[in-house]
Image 1: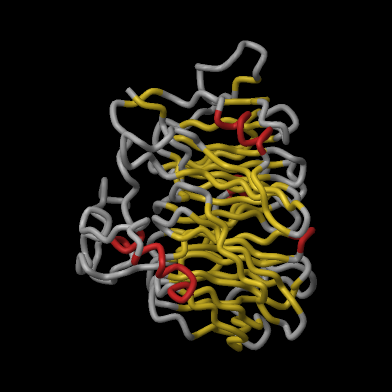
Image 2: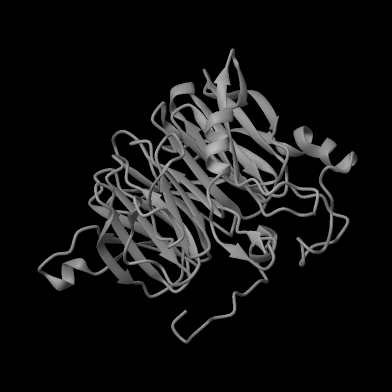
Length: 385
């Protein structure tokens, strides 16, 4: 038996850390102490979160003010929690399986992107008017929507990216008014990051092994950062191995640099990215121009499954151990120290001391290049998928 790894990590403006493992999640404070959990395997003093998911959680989000937390599982159940007492304030079944969720700036609506290329929004509070509580179609793509984010400042935009290599910027809430398209990626676009310090810009990550900086008003590509130039040494010295076990639809001899997640570090005016199967985080400063500068590769010893930002600290969740020699640590936390990034030993130790659940084996996560292949079709679990 082994300890289940963290599959998703999310942080809030109130200092909460959400750690997702399969169908459950812990909520910790900024010191790593569990304050609420869906798991039964926690101390009696920890708030037990009801309305627990019965299937694997695939996406989560906090509202901008941290007062709400939402989850969506593989059975298409969306649950919204009040973070003051961790009660479920709303639960609903959506028609299609979600890929990403985010709250609008007010927290009044939750936006839900799905595998059928649509983004719906639903009120976060129940209404006496049943029709008003139903999800409404906000916008549509012609392929899987991989991520959805809101811009900062005014006017307000909703940003979406898809498997067909596009970034779309739409006015919010009238998203039928398209402000711009960002064209330039050559593979599926997995992730979007926006920032308060750069209200007219966004950074995207893709299966093409690049991070790209965009002007969201015009859709102009401002800059491209090629990760191969930075990370190829990890292939050449054997720290990252090519193999069909993770790239079922690709040639076994192909190097890949797929970006899993990009986040903004507001207090440092930086962005941080996680790259599939690489034991690193990539940190980029945002400077005049605008431009991404001072690009650094920070080795974190094991491949990263997800990354989030807590104040000025980076929380990187580890992918499942790939061998007997790997530790079973859940995460590592990095903090700025003397102009560099160093391990926050105290918070890292607190997170790694947490229990998740015991499983038979730690199976590797499916590669993003499997579902990112345009010939890939996700087999439906029922007629409504």
